[in-house]
Amino acid sequence: MATQLYSPIVKGKLNDLKALGKISAAARTNIKPLIEAMPLAKGGDIEKHLQKLADYLVKHVPFGDIYLDFYGLLPDLKTPDGTNATIAGFNLIKALGRTVTPVYGFDRNDSIWTSLAAVIGENGHGFCFRIDIDDLDDQADDTWRQIVERSAEFGLKPSEIDLMLDLRGLNNREFEDLQEVVLDFLVINPLIQQYRTIVLAGSSALKTVTTVPKDGVDHMKRYELTLWSKLQREVPEHIDLVFGDYGVIHPDFSDQGPNKHMNAKIRYTDRGRIVYFRGHGLRHPIKDYEQYHGLAVQVRESAGYQGRAFSYGDRYIDDVADFNTTHGSPATWVLADMNHHLEYTARQMASLAPKVREVADESELEEIA
Figure 1 (spheres, rainbow, N blue to C red):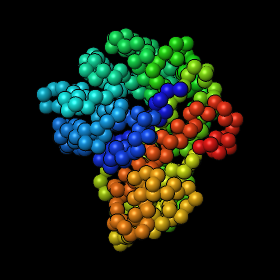
Figure 2: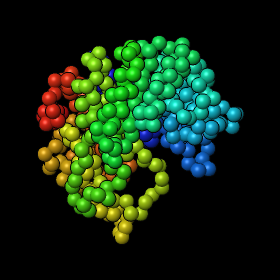
Figure 3: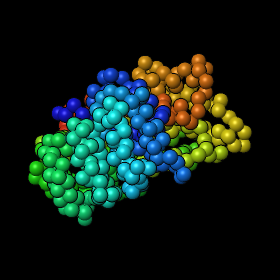
Figure 4: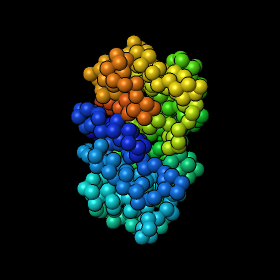
């Protein structure tokens, strides 16, 4: 069983990275996260954008293995000296002493594959192919061809390469179809067991809480967890799938400006679901951040609450509920929600991964999750 059991995809924003940096040492041993750079704002300075991400990584995630993907940047974006922004970003972070496993995918900018070889060599942690849903199904054979050819260009053996199958949002997908598409892709290559790690990632997190009753509670099933468990039982025994998700953040989250109609909410992961505690408008028709105290009380009184000692996020919930700290803001609640989720899922995987092949059905999975 691989020690890497969980690979969350974490947005390269301040509070998301703080949430990652605040997980426990025990949880850290099972996690290899993928940090995803955010898009450059219109009219923004690419050098400052890259520097900010580099500084966040060095300050808030200074230890442990991580994947890094400049997915959010436009493929042809360049720095003032003419360097592709993705290559410039990898070089900047390495210059600051933070080594990473570089990540790149297909249908981006094919001209930088040669430059990536140097980046891979300088970091010394192998390489990860990020395989999108569009790279599977009818494109599966071509995707495998590209993986083999690019690996040869890099001079890397399969044992130095990770494959991340990123299914992104799952809420509007047919579950059985996804299961079949992934399984078909995995069995095409008879040497797949030689690859260092195979991550199966996806997300059921809501993009907005409009479907949750105002001042109410609802939950969303973590379909990515069910999909991972079913596929792990179907693939040959020599293939271990690492679980991946987007935490409590929707894959298509965009870093847009303040929304006057934003609602207060706390997202709390509990077994096979994300529970949404929704308040009401934060700024409209009147400013009301104090409602977070009441929401925190609801979380603390819920059956799934793990107690303040469980994580930084749980401690924050407890402190807000008791008015021992301020009500916070949407940004600080991202930190708390994500930190609890990352801690919870890392521990969950430590329990589930060794047993998942023995699980008979979804109800049994729920019991041991």
